[in-house]
Length: 485
Ligand SMILES: NC(=O)c1ccc[n+]([C@@H]2O[C@H](COP(=O)([O-])OP(=O)(O)OC[C@H]3O[C@@H](n4cnc5c(N)ncnc54)[C@H](OP(=O)(O)O)[C@@H]3O)[C@@H](O)[C@H]2O)c1
Image 1 (tube, helix red, strand yellow):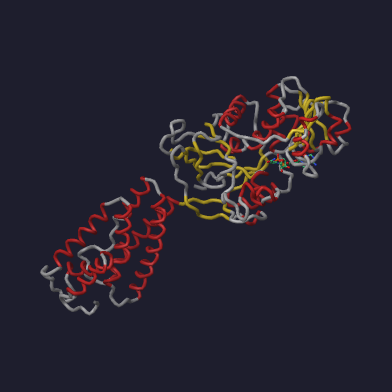
Image 2: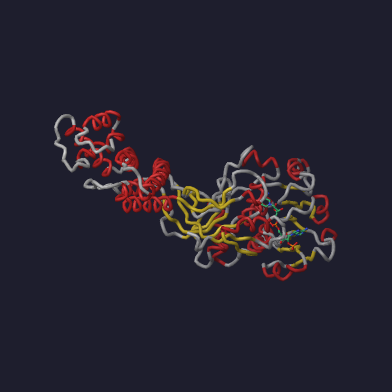
């Protein structure tokens, strides 16, 4: 077909019969005239075919629906190949760009199928790029500027539809987490899309990433992690809402907790509008809001299980962790009298959280204290019921954030109803919007201020994991995404 023979109508006929896509370039060449400079007259089957092909091009370019757009892209990418001159070096470059566009095309189609109407419109716009104008009768290198524009638009689209995220596809040490480009979520019915400004790496993320203890796999995926992007705490700005959402709107500053689905270690995440999120109070930063929910969620679960009331005496062991530092403040907001246990270097910090009395665990064994408590909350999971029993009042309650040295705490909690005295509770923590709104009130009133130890950019999340796993963080470790979008 590149022989320059005039009036090669059979080619066109065959091409058209072989299918619209393959026929397009040939029919287009008929419409343009061949290299002899003679215009082909539209007799025989050609006029209909040309008209049909032109219609096809026009419809495809105008149609923002799936089939129209995909057909146009096929035409755009493959059609011109029918007209290739023997390639010079510039021609080879054009072919290279064509191949890149073909790859973009495949990706765009994949994204298109999952995209919302706004995305479809955007792809429809991209589909209107035509690097092969109808009056082009020269070599393919003349198409280069148009191809480059098409390519740049594909790239722009791909960027709009992708985001940076910390991804892990297998369980293991911090190094299994990689920063990758993944598809940006689209808010479905009842969902909110949040542009994440800050998140945290906490012990929950570490446990889910490493699948430790092993039984966690029952919830996170037996062989491989189901949630490949972790991150449960977040603060950011609502980017878009799905249909049916009336409680939030684009531009709202929100924060919350998304344990289970996770997804906050990314530039964007979607979450049900009736999930654990609330608008941010004006007096906190994104970083503070992001660090407000995991520790307080567990602390609150313990406090509520123990039914702690104003005036009760509570001991918090591990008062410098995310859970412990939240527990001290939440207990004070309820009017409890709090004794906090930490090491020498954190005595002032813990006093600043409002603790009535602070014990340095490096100075002696706190379990030998004479003072008795209504509840002992081991927020760092380093003690046992048998060690702490003597600290409890007759009906005192012991709660630990860990299973216990022999994983005995759940069992001791099961048999707790059998004896009326001192007992162990092992509450299953639950989170909802009410919980986040409660935290919001405490933040707003200044009764709770999360302790922030370090802040890392998303790119250094592996470092953040390593640090959190030392078990020596003070409060929370924040991941900042500001400037990342
Ligand atoms: N049940 C769950 O689903 C769940 C979820 C999240 C976390 N957790 C568990 O809860 C615990 C607390 O987690 P977290 O994130 O709040 O804090 P964390 O990172 O485990 O705690 C760090 C703090 O604990 C203190 N600490 C370390 N060793 C200690 C010891 N022997 N005695 C007293 N304090 C000690 C350190 O302060 P000092 O310098 O003062 O020692 C440090 O500031 C962890 O064991 C974690 O695995 C359980």
